[in-house]
Amino acid sequence: MKKNILITGGAGFIGSHVVRLFVNKYPEYTIVNLDKLTYAGNLENLKDIDKKPNYIFEKADICDSKAIDELFDKYQFSGVIHLAAESHVDRSISDPMAFINTNIIGTVNLLNAARKTWLTTNNEQRTTNNLFYHISTDEVYGSLSEEGMFVEETSYDPRSPYSASKASSDHLVRAYHHTYKMPVVISNCSNNYGPNQFPEKLIPLAINNIKNNKAVPVYGKGENIRDWLFVEDHANAIDLIFHNGIVGETYNIGGNNEWKNIDLIYQLCKEMDLQLGREKGTSEKLITFVKDRAGHDLRYAIDSSKIQKELGWKPSLQFEEGLRKTVEWYLKNDVWLTNIVSGDYEKYYDKQYVKR
Ligand code: NAD
Ligand code: TYD
Image (cartoon, rainbow, N blue to C red; front, side, top):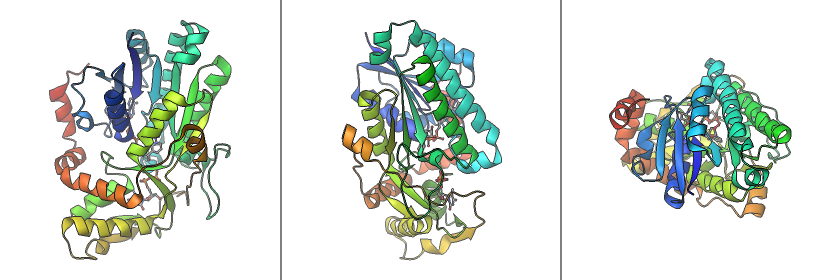
């Protein structure tokens, strides 16, 4: 029998890369993409695969427990890869409640539905066949000074409403494993970049602003440090963990690629000048230092040696190449960018799918 695999948040940035990978690589699975289509969800991200016979889209809100239970009844999922979330730190500072609802309550609704479904199958099937895979962030570990790296044993110390909501959902996933023997696995990844990222996050926001000759806002002095990973490398890690990860374990995923924000923006400006055929130094003039983010974490850095040693994963792209591909994609997909900032992609959705 074909396995039905649920991917939540598949219309978003990372989710769309995971859905594409699974639909293309595993014809033996039916991939059900469950997404509420918030401002961050965009079915245009998947238009190259949405006619494939092993792909189904279901518009639903993970906060609606009844709708979630119905979908589990309908599809009897044998695996869940949970990416749906509110994901932007700045929005979590201005509206924490949306993060509490989706990231915490939504996750518990999925855990409950999976538990109910899987309790009716026998124990052996439960551990070999059913897996609840929760996608999380390195931000749950808090903020580093100049030294050190996050390992899987690092104590949780979330400091923004976003990271606190993700930490809370990680704890709940582990609690369901310990209490109810739910087969779970968690991964915590560093900052992703690449095609399809909503232009509120640093890299696509800067690309969009530079393209339109608008100021590029750099928070504080631009001295904060992030580790950047190309999104397809994250999707490949998710594939490996879903298939070969050990139940109950956590895996850190990172690019070993730390950049001070200001240095990253200089690098991006150079790439933009090159690809837009502008004179060297043109884009840099748009850099504008603005008020710092409240509670801005100084540095994230992740030690991903566990997944490298145990599952044989490693990042495939050098940052310079990833950045070049990303800029190329955004400049080529001008309509995607214009539509997503204007909200026109909702009209695309109405035309393609009948609303439930
Ligand atoms: P995103 O904001 O681009 O996409 C989130 C998706 O979830 C959207 O399609 C949205 O419509 C959907 N969604 C939101 N609320 C929902 C709800 N209540 N019900 C159903 N669907 C809902 O996010 P992303 O950057 O792709 O992140 C995906 C996951 O990966 C998140 O769990 C995030 O915490 C995690 N993560 C992200 C990064 C990163 O750098 N972006 C790094 C590590 C981990
Ligand atoms: P972001 O892409 O929002 O990811 P996160 O906060 O989850 O790491 O931001 C990356 C870094 O860039 C972070 O240190 C905040 C900073 N930043 C700016 O300096 N200017 C901006 O306009 C944005 C969106 C972020």
